[in-house]
Image (tube, rainbow, N blue to C red):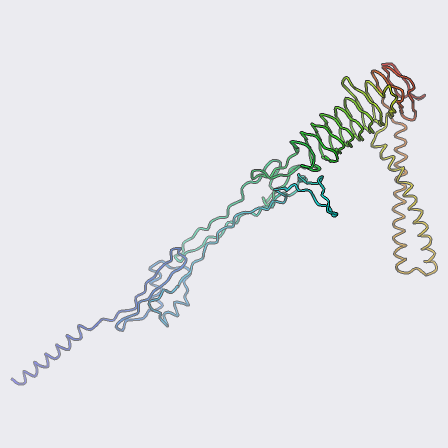
Length: 481
């Protein structure tokens, strides 16, 4: 019995030991959790440490955890390798990075002219102020660049850590700036002008206008006006101011002691007093007084008094007044008026059949040729002296250069003189052989009037009524209307 008790005790002891073994903690491996950022560009892991002798995180376990969360792009394998070798627990560790999208850049533009003009008079070097130069308009040429445009960029899409596309935001193009008479260049990177004109920026558009409208007067509020294109002045042009246009000029008020220069026609709804008028086309005015006028085309006006007129074609006075009194008139074709001169015998000189532009060029050549010949003579003397030095081997490098320059200048002037003489001869022949127009007067040509047609000149000593004066080989003929 004693033996049995010992065996029982032993059995009891084994059972006790087994009970103790059955209740001991089980080993727990490291727990890997994966988190993805809201923008899907980063993936993190947080590892709970193993317990009771559980296994640390292995590379395979880490990769499996990421795969289970679909993290397949931008995985940083070096970090995973380091973690598997030296685990870091209970801390968020970035293990994958995606590619951020690059948003496009919005288009932009640079306007190449002044949008806002301060209209302040310019200060001269001496401190005084120039009220005539306010630059209220900016002229541009056809094809000129008015605005540079930077096109928007598309941007680049990104990639999430789950290998999904993250769309970028494309750049926005600039709003359309195209206004009147403007266009884009071929690649859309510039706005250019279709015409010569005046550029402005209104209501978000770039415009080039062919005609500039001045609503009031041309005075100190506007300064001088110079435009590429046409100009219409609703008011007057005040003394001392200049209006210049490559196209037509129309002034609805008066023009007093001012200057108008037109590449087209000039239309004066009122008239001009004490002014300078110059146009490539025709001039129409109610009256012209005490003015200097150069017109390549025709002149049509109610009356002209005490003016210096050069007209390429026909000078015609109209209306019930229709008179030419005092002054000098060089006209290419006909002069038509009701009254020429005055009963007071005011000196009035008419010259017919002479193109004003040809006469102007003739006068220029007559003035320029003697000056050129004088320069040529001086250069000849200098060259002769330097040649003597050269023959005597006394020509220094400096004098040698002077000789070279003098010879070149002399040759240029000699050519200019030769061409000028030929041109002057051609002009003289043209003037002498050209057909001539007429002076047509429906009422009276008063004494004090001188008429020149071609080489002949006639002084009116007594009133001529209803007559036409014209050229013949024997002189100026006076005919009845």
